[in-house]
Length: 179
Picture 1 (cartoon, rainbow, N blue to C red):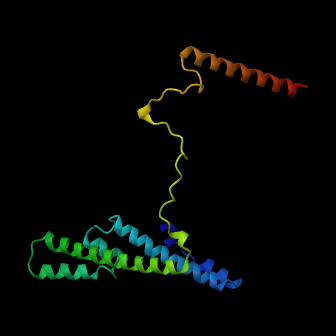
Picture 2 (picture 1 turned 135 degrees about the horizontal axis):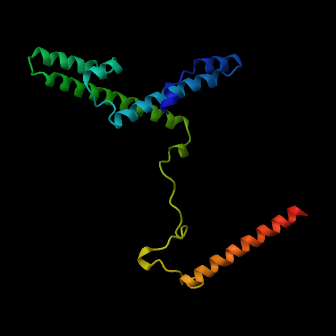
Picture 3 (picture 1 turned 90 degrees about the horizontal axis):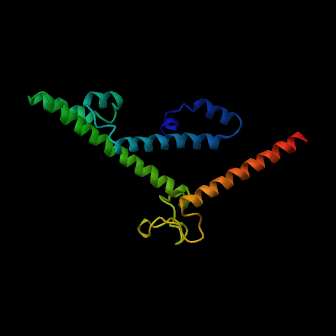
């Protein structure tokens, strides 16, 4: 989603408009905007913005200004060196997180009104009982009767038979190609 959010789609949208796909070009732009907002919310949730005030301000000057104001105010109050930067970074990252979650909630609500409900399933429905045939480790891992060889000698005999069958089928194939 990050690659889509960062992609430059203007040329593609212009080409779409030239061939008469104005509505689809607008939808593509809207999808890119939604991807940008949702990837920003994902970054906030995963701690991307838990960094210093300088980096926050350089990456997000519009959203991190409250943190910069807190930092400058703390410097004016003659606080010791790291405290203004730390307090500014905390306020800026909190402000960015609040804005990102608010934007993501708005996008989610907008998508819920336009997309069918099955697009919002977060997990698949539970399978019916008996769908899977995994063995229960508490009951042991031995073979059930009629399931195959149990002794090493029986297993070796099965392997030899399989090898003979393969060699015979390969020989038959070679003879068929020779004819």
